[in-house]
Amino acid sequence: MDGDILQRLAAGPVLGDGGYLLELEKRGWVQAGPFTPEVSLTHPEAVAELHREFLRAGAEVLTTLTFYASDDKLATVGMQGKVEEINRAAVRIAREAAAGSDALVAGNISLTWKYDPAEPSSADRVRELFDRQLGWQVDEGVDFVIGETFSALGEALVAVERIKAAGKVAMVTMSFEKEPRSYEGHSPAECCRRLAGAGAEIVGVNCLRGPAATLPLMREIRAAVDGFVACQPVAYRTPADDPDFTALPEFPHGLEPLQLSRAEMADYALEARELGVDFIGSCCGSVAAHVRAMARALGKLPPAERPWRSTTGKAMSAYEYYDHDARDAEKAERGR
Image 1: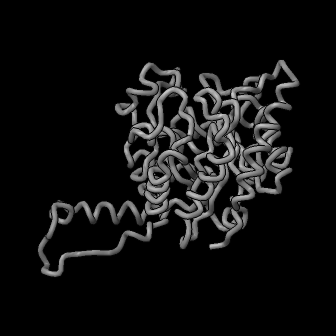
Image 2 (image 1 turned 45 degrees about the vertical axis):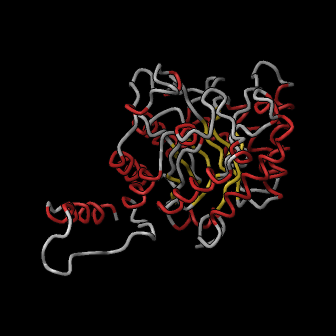
C-alpha cells in the first residue's frame, strides 16, 4: 500500500483503529476522570499491545496516544514537565508497532479545554499548545495528523492552521453533544465546509455519539463536502434524546451495558461505506473485536485469518456443526 493517506483514500475507504484511553482505563493503565496519556511513559508496553491488537484486527492507521498530551491538560495531574517525553514516546511506540506492516501512523492533537469563542486571546494559547505537540510528533515521523473531538469550530480551525503550518496532511473532526451544532452554532455540514476551506484534506465527525446518531450527520456532510470525509463514532448505544455518551450517568464506570456488539459495528462500517465515507474508523468503546468485524465487513480480511476446514468430512467444531461458518462466509461475501 502507498504511504500517503490521500492516495490510499483515493483508492477506496481506509479503516481506522479504535479507542485508546477508555480501553486502557478498563485495563487499569489510565485513570478515569483526567484520562491523561502518561501511560506512554509509565507503561509503554500496554500502549504497544493495544496498537498491535488494532493492527492485527485490520486497522490501516494507528493513532498516537497523544490525545490530551498538551501542557495545560497534563498539568492537571502534575505531568506538565513531561509533555515532550510523552509526545515523543507515544509516536515511537506507534511507529514500532506499525513496523513491518503497511499501516500509517497518525499524530494526534485534541481539544485543549482552553479555547473560549468569547475570548480571542485564547486562540493564541491553543496555537502554542498545538505547536509544541506537533513539533515533537513531526520530528518523530508521523505520516499525517488527526485533530479531533472539537466542539468549538474556532478551535478546530486553529488545529487545521497549525497542522498545515507543520507541513502535514490534516484530518480534523468535530464532536457534537446533545444538539448537532458547534459551540458557535454551526451545523456539522457548515463546520466541515469551513474546515475544508481552511485547508483540511479530510473532515468529519468523531466521538461522543454512537453510529445511529453520527451517520445522519455524515449524510449531510457528504452532501456538502467535495473532498474526503471521516467518521469515527463511539461504540456505545445512547438514547436518541441524549446522544452524548459522556453526559450519561453510566460515564465513565458503567458503560459496559451500553457497548455495541461487533455485528452492530460491522453494520455501521457498511452503512458508512454506502454513504461515501472515506475514512471509516471508531472511537471510545471500540476494541479490536469491533475493528476486526469492521474489517471483515469491508472486505479487508486481517492477515491473521486464514481459510480452514475439517479434513475428515465431519465437523471439528461447533462453528462448523451449526453452520455458523457458512453464515459468516455469506455475510462476508455480501460485504464485498
